[in-house]
Structures are given as C-alpha cells and as structure tokens.
Length: 129
Image 1 (cartoon, helix red, strand yellow):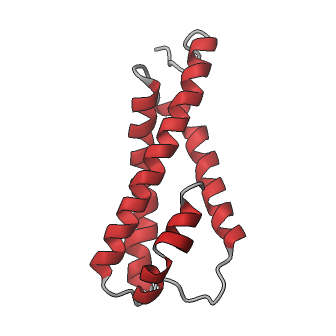
Image 2: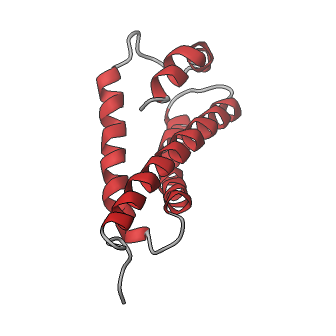
C-alpha cells in the first residue's frame, strides 16, 4: 500500500490519466486499499504452504512474484483488454514496474516476518514429510 498511492496518484497520475486508465473524476481510495488488503491477507495465508527452507526473504520475494504475476494479469492485461488505454505498451510497462516493486517489497516484508516466526518456533514453517 505504501507505494500504490504515490505511484498512481502523484508520480504517474497524469500519464495514466492521459492513457485513459482513469475514468473516474475522483478515485475511490478505500476500494483500492481494500484490494491491497485482500491481496496481503491471501499472500500471508498462502506463504507458509510455499516456504520449505532457505533464506526467508528470498523465498518471500519468489513467492510474492509468483502471486504478483497473477495479480498483474488482471491489473495489466485484463484491464487493457476492457478499457480503451493507449498506448497499451506504455500502460503495461508502467504497470509491470509498479507490480514488480510492490511485490518485491511485499515478499521482503513477508520473508522478514515469517523468518522471525521460523526462528522463534524452531522451523515452525518448514513442512515435515
């Protein structure tokens, strides 16, 4: 959430608006925050099923990038398919960079949080076979 507002509403607002990505006169910030909250809860819930061993930050980033690719398919490709955004390549590129930054940060935080849990609970997250 920390990067979403400045990215979309400050740094690249005019670019996105010029491409036709924004059609509301006033964005619904709460709805955007809810979207990211749902993503965060889902990622935090699913990560323990993914994490096996290794550096928790690297594993968190890998997992978050995998999940982020699914989110990007909706935020990038599906959005561009439904709304008259031009040029599409510029929209997809900026969206890709934003999603990459967002999910690397998410994965880093996820790895740091679960890495502490892992150490505290003696490999609580590591699955046993």
